Every structure is written in structure tokens, then in C-alpha cells.
Length: 249
Image 1: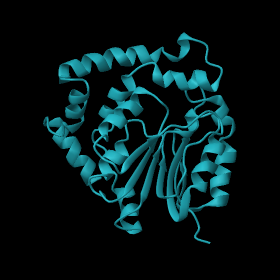
Image 2: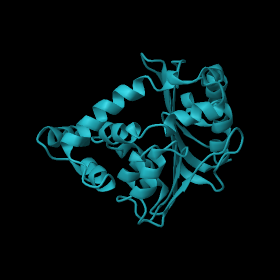
Image 3: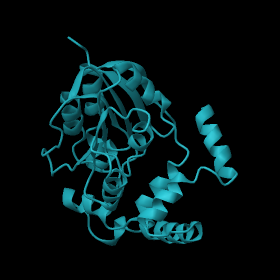
């Protein structure tokens, strides 16, 4: 909380502009004025993007995120004041070295925050082939301990090794097979490993109705298979947030 408050204060004072420096380098000289123009126009365009063409298959759903780079700007701005001490504590307990996976990474804000603090860890970023993933690939291009993976369609899921910590945040409502994704993630969690996960209930548009139909079974699987460290909490937006640990036995 104190970290976030400090960042917000710096933001109001015109500091904490690392997010803008990264965007400026990526977009070759983007200024704050140009950012706001692109952000505002992109936001208006993205608001109607889903309805512009029929979307009835997994390929149609996935293409939505590849049709604009607005989400690069949005995520970098939205996460500019984020702090992840709550996840860092888990990495610290696991040891000086370990394996971390940001499943559904977008521009990878969690990894960007953790990597300088845990440089000996290995990081896996997973997301669809979109402008966000291309930005993340560019963002970590100099770090050999960061790898990027893309899921295929349906059951073609990307993880091939096990992890001490996995985050799966703001993901499950956007996939057609959340139960399958969660099974895959749990299978690749080390005994004693930690999973941070959430799952919103708001079907419609990019919050897929197919996903909402599997929500109860997905949560039940997590409750049955893992041990809840942070008990399931449902907020006013019907979003389930939880921290789980895979039993060592």
C-alpha cells in the first residue's frame, strides 16, 4: 500500500515516468502529448471493435486482441503505479533462484516489477500472439532468463516445465476453456508452489459466455485440488480472487 501511494504521489508530481520512457523508446520518440492522442483515439476505436465483425469461434475471439495496439498503451498506463510485494514475498520464501510464470501476461507488468528484484529467477511469459506480446518480447529482449510462449488452440497449451509461482490474473474470463487452462497450470505447479488466480463473472463480449459456463467447475477444481492460502473472496463485481498452494504430498 505504501509503495503504491508513493508511486501515485510521484505520478502526480510528474515523476514515475518509466512507463512512458519505455513506450517512447518502443514507438521511437512518443511524447506524452502524442501518447494521450493515441490513447484517446485507440480507446474509442477499441470500444466498438468487438462488434465490428461476427465472432463465433476461438479464432475470432483471439483475433480481437491482435486488431489494435491500444491495449499496449492501456496496460502500460493502467499498471504504471502497481507494486507486487504480495507476490514478491512468495518468491522470497521460495529461495534466491526459482521459476516464475506470468500466464496471460499482456505487457508483463508483474515480471517487469519482479525481474530486477529477483534477477536469478527464470521467467516464462505466456500470451496470445498480439501487439502486447510483441511489446513484452521487445521489453525483455536483453534478458536471457525471460522466455515467451504462445498457447495454441484448444488443448494445445504451452507449459513444458514446472514453476514455483504462477500468476493467472485477468485471463480466465477471456478463454473458451478455463477449466482446461487451470488443469494445465496446476499440472505445471511444483509441489509447494503457489498459484495466484482470479476469475470475473461478467459474460458478454470479450468476457466469453463459454468461459462463464465453466466458471463454477473451474473454481471447484481449484478448491478440490489445491490448498487455499487466501480464502476465496468474491467482490461486488463477482470477481473471485485467491492464492493457492499445491500440496507437497
